[in-house]
Image 1 (cartoon, rainbow, N blue to C red):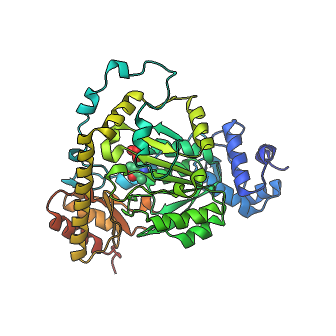
Image 2: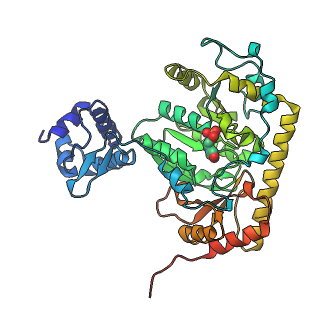
Image 3: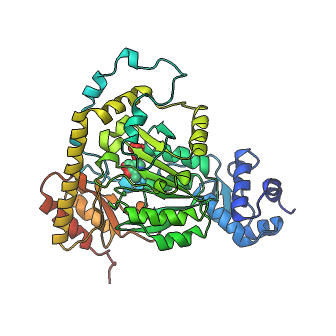
Length: 449
Ligand SMILES: Cc1ncc(COP(=O)(O)O)c(C=O)c1O
């Protein structure tokens, strides 16, 4: 062994693949054997030291760079960045803007005026109904029954967590390891891509059409042995596509032939127009289904429910007992009230209809302006533009905010859309559509000729 670093890595190298090498390096960084700032030998030298091909080392370095375990430091080469904290990089990029807007359509948030009043639900909580113990059941009585009423498949394995992102975080941490490959939709939700990057997990993006993820490229992606596939079954953010039952069945048939776990993020929940849908109907032993209550009842409730195969849900429950333990039963009690009170159910039904009407109106007005968009559900419209930056600047000059589209894309070259939260357009639809269409048409500045 020529290099000291090679020795350290060789001691931890179990699997002689790029994934195995990435795992060995991250283990060495984790146990302190490769300290922050350590300069790594050139790829060829290390490859020969470890008797691996240079392309295997390069692939591992790319994985570790995405996970911010390594970074290229110009002439100094590649260095360890052990203490770099991975953060929501794409998410910030999608929402970053410098001024405040008259009409901020960048957020993807529910309209506060359409969220139910929590007062009534809170007033029904009384001392006797609030747990004072660490030992009670982590799910409050009545919640499972309320969830089961419209859960998209038969299951009794539920867990309550602190929002859909908490669910994705916990499930990913349990299932995925550095160097794993997963399949995601393209476009995809930026915080999910940030999370995968932080875990050092590679993602393969598969395009979405009007029925959901496209089956043929999914079948091809399965040949790369992904550990998981992430889907948004309803009101896909950003496109607004809800998966058809036929598409869900087709994807389930394909997934069933490989050992891949399906992780579904139903983030719109009850404000989605489409009925609940899940691959769990066909492959329950391989499906984790998450439903958020943020869009329907308020992001600050911080609640989501998940179901999944016993071995996964049980492992998550056990792991959680080492940390937070459970999700506030006080909030769960509020959720039971919200899910069962007839007045709140009517309120959410009205919100669902209102979002659908706003989205339809903006889509139709855009169509009249010559701009076609996809999807029929949820809060957002995925607006095709010639140039993302020019479109955002043009809209900002009219006091309108929209989200940059490139952080949603799994392909680095794409800047061909912006996301517009149609659910927040309450008036002047024709004017807003006109300004969006104008912004969409602007070509990138080609520089002086
Ligand atoms: C696709 C998707 N997943 C997850 C979330 C976050 O959900 P929660 O607030 O339940 O964490 C959102 C919120 O916009 C979302 O659009």
